[in-house]
Image 1: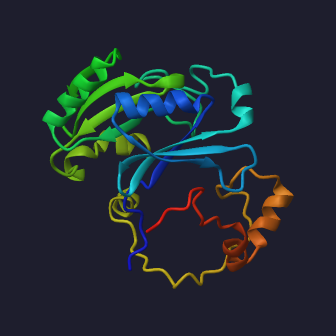
Image 2: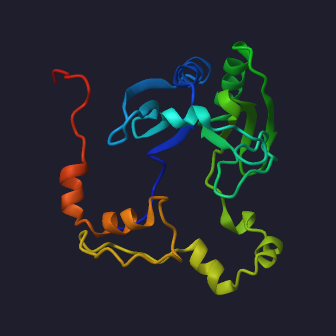
Length: 230
């Protein structure tokens, strides 16, 4: 088994208006609501899942404190596909369709709901339409009929701009294979030079020291909110 990511399971975005997001993504974009429940382990949190396909979803999280956060263009939101926002925030979100005809059909669907759409624009590597969603989301629907060819789409000028060496580029385009160790690699010591979740530092250190099997046993929520006969 090769240890590598192979797709998007779900994209989670904060919201202060869950019904508005659900209405937009179901009616305007045609995604199906498949989950709406109390967020596991997060008091006061609500979670929804909107099906893109059987193994990929759009998700929204509503927390009480979301309502107190002020959205600010250039900080929390980019506002357009060319807009800036704080590092680590989402610049825009692009969904896939399979063909150019599907893309045009999506443009028709979105416009039929009174939402303005730009494009399509042909980027060579893909064709895209652009529009806005509730709460300042910058959205795109895109399609490409062939895989992106890295030989054509990695620009040497940009590689040089970032000071990426030939060895680094080779590692980026062909990452080292890793087959895993059956889940036996030990938790490393907390290193503040590595990325970390934003917990209280002392609580984070304690959490990282909890054995995996204990966290799995006591932190898992496996029962759905509604019993369904199989």
